[in-house]
Length: 141
Image 1 (cartoon, rainbow, N blue to C red):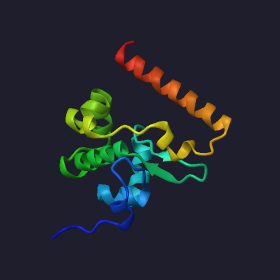
Image 2: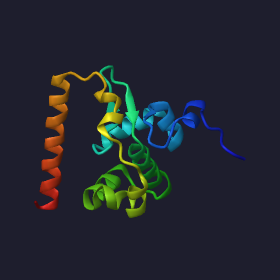
Image 3: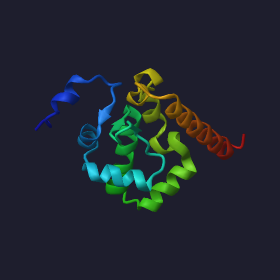
Image 4: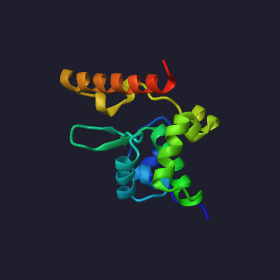
C-alpha cells in the first residue's frame, strides 16, 4: 500500500526547505524526537528563524534518516552514533553516494537570510568561522 504524502510535501521541489512536521514525516519519527536529536547530535543543525521555527534542508532530512536507521535498525546507541560521526565525518557517516546525491542549498534559498539584520548575519558568519576552524583542526590543516 502506498504511503500518503502530505499536500505541502507533494507540492515542494527536491531542494525546498521542510518544516519540522514535513521533516518528521519524511524521516518517520515524531517532531519531539527530531528536537531531542538536535540536543544529542550537534551536527544536526536546521535553519532557525527569529521565532525559533525550524526549516530542514534536504541534506538535514537525509542526515536525520541516517540517524534513525543507525539507532532503530542498526542498533547503535546515541553515543555510538556520536562516535561514528566523529570518526567518519559527514561524508563517511551518510555514505559517499548519499551525500553526493543531496543537493546543496544556496544562501539565497535560506529562510533565515530573508530579512536578516546585520547583527544576525555577523553572528552567523562567526558561527561559520568557528565551524570551519573546527573542521580544519579535524582535517589537520
